[in-house]
Length: 287
Image (tube, rainbow, N blue to C red; front, side, top):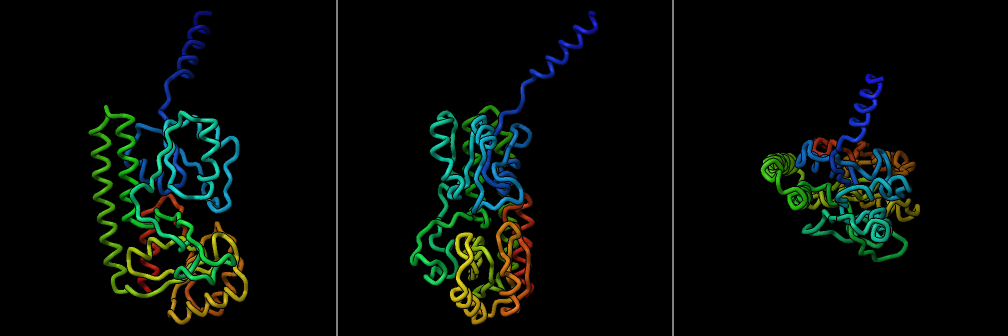
């Protein structure tokens, strides 16, 4: 009997053991950056499941309940699903601290609608929507990391030295990555690349490249408008066409039959964010 009581007590003690506080981010690249800063002090969860399309993603009730249990929610800034749950969080979890990781970033407008801010991409004409893909820039990633670092320091100041050392190491790595990509892409300055979904606007801005997109805000464009995009790509001597499997890109092979570029699959939403940035730069530099 004593043995059973002891075993029950032990199990209850295990079940009641304190767990790590939870931080939640919107996308995997944020998780990569935040985990480099907080190490094993927090459990970092990601709202967007791997392989999900951020343009059509809708968090279900389980996602929202788990989010409400978090101590801090770091949103990337302007993704559609983030804006959709904003009011729900204010009502159901008013105590939850929500941090906009895009604070301080110079945001682009219109680039999420396609090539060169033109009217040809979307049927509704002029578009001034903020481009949400801020994480595809190493320059922006440093700002995102700093926003998260400062917030974590405020929440847990007793581990300041730990977080600061981690953040400084991450900053050095990001600086080295930025220099590497800049050197890799310097010979390609002024050239253009094509992409199915316009997710690389900030990347293009950083390295003086032109992004030519084949779709608009997650939607296929009309045949006439698509032809205009292809003509622009041809005139720009595009050699590489990027696509993401998360997006409906059934037209991609048909487009490339006319364009004649090299098809390259990318995943800017990957946790292995730094390697993805290198792969994109390499694909452009070798054409």
